[in-house]
Amino acid sequence: MKNLLKITILAAASAAHKQGVLPSSDFSEVILEEPKAESHGDLSTNIAMQMAKTQRMAPRKIAEALIENLDDKDGLIERTEIAGPGFINFFIRPTAWHPILSTIHKQDDKYGQCDIGKATPIQIEFVSSNPTGPLHVGHGRGGAVGDSTANILSFCGYDVQKEYYINDSGRQIQTLGISVYLRGKELLGKTVDFPETCYQGDYIKDLAKELLEKDGKDIFEKAEADAIMPCARFAADKIIDGMRADLEDFGIRFDRWFSEQSLYDSGKVDADIRAFKEKGLVYEKDGAQWFATSNYGDEKDRVVVRQNGQTTYFASDITYHKDKFERGFRKVIDVWGADHHGYIPRVKAAVEATGYNPDQFDVLLVQLVNLLRAGKPVAMSTRSGEFVTLSDVIKEVGRDAARFIFLSRHYDSPLDFDLDLAKKKTNDNPVYYVQYVHARIASIHRKVVNDGLNVSGFSPSDLLALDTSEDITLIKNLTRYPEAVKAAGTFMEPHRITFYLMNLAAAFHTYYNRHRVLCEDDLPLTRARLHLITAVQKVIRNGLSLLGISAPESM
RNA sequence: GCGCCUGUAGCUCAGCUGGAUAGAGCAACGGACUUCUAAUCCGUAGGUCGCAGGUUCGAAUCCUGCCAGGCGCGCCA
Image (cartoon, rainbow, N blue to C red; front, side, top):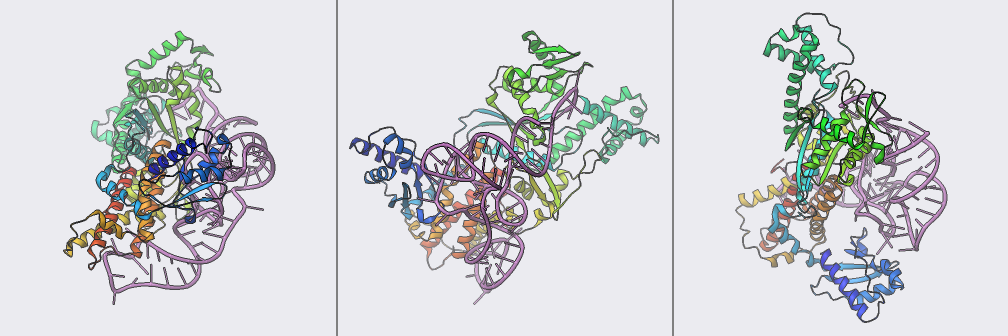
């Protein structure tokens, strides 16, 4: 609809130019919008105002010239008006909206797809929680945002790979090993001093117990230095298995799990550091090796090898991001918690230093989640091991409700996640509001079958019966879906789909309460309305699938 | 002190990357189930878009400066 109208308007501009009414042939892009107020028509353009400068004419004069030259071949326009400073408002002939319905039926689960990605290989890395403890709610949000963004990008024509980066190297892994080792000693009846720096959660005790049952007590009787790494590996593997299972429960499956340790094992990190030294990008100061990130806009240089000879997290991160680009990704997206924002300049610097364009690297900073119960904060302290895990949340409120809540807000704004609210099955909790649309329509379809209603023989002319304002409103909502998808993909903002679906759901519920779909005494009308609501159902299902949320047949 | 993010109805948030009279849900109040699922709908009420300037035909949106809140600023990850 918009595109057809845009072409018509541009044609009008050329025609007016040929007649000499418009002096310049330099036409700006036609932007069509849906006015907020219905009295301003179905679609509106500000082009007359945009062109005022280049044409050196009053906007309203330009608008008049355009309208006079409109050639509405497809019969889309019922009437036009010039309003305010020079808006051109178009009132679309109601039946002109109908063809979108057959498009939806024809394209089915492909309706709304676009090709802004042009098969560009893009990688999105998310969650990437350290394997030192279970996933919590914050990871859930990152997971929902990352996974849904991946779905949307894929739907927008990108070639998407989802990756999980496992920080299975460095100090926190050592700490994990020590924690398990000490808890194991406790199990053997020894008194140990369990340091505050160790992981306090009960899951550490469980891991120690598991290891004891599996391999016997030998390992816990060894000297600490010999026991740490075996303990750490065992625990990390177990924890990763657990995270993998939790993520699957949450509907997330990664294409690849990438081990940080593998970058060391292959010698890539060392090789990179050596290469940077030769280029003068890595230098020695105060006994440590520094990377000259400040050459690339970071506020200061960063250590890659510490005085004690150990590499920092940043060292492997340079190699990791370089590796991503070497694997052929043209666009690399990291989803991080907002508390890591200070890290962005140095990774951007690293990307640039390794010879890639920092604009090809983007970070989605997901703001923190505040977990509440009945409006009151749930105490959470990672150190002490008191926290609500992602798996607890999924068990308590369900996967669909959890995902919907995570995606019901721009990732950039902090989120209150109220466990009690998430369980409510009212309008407080819009996931059910949207799913209910799907279930209601499924129910109508069941009734058609059960009552033996003969609704075959649909013909496009039946659609003429869809002429009430609720019909048109609903259809117009359906035409917006491709735009919502495109915007969600362009800006990597899944919440746009969420809000779109809530709007569509509202339009449907209104429709449902106002109009009966199945009218035994008017089969053409029944066929038309079934055609309409089935299209709605397809779009709802389609949109929910982008969010990773199920579309139930009944509720 | 510096940097990033946020400030919109009593509460939780949208606002299509500059458009016309700023929108939803919840909470409040009043209505609608012998009819396809009331997990729904309809109506009423509720606003100086943090404050002050600037940019222009036009600003919640862009720029600058303040104010308030959150988060960062390690040879931690």
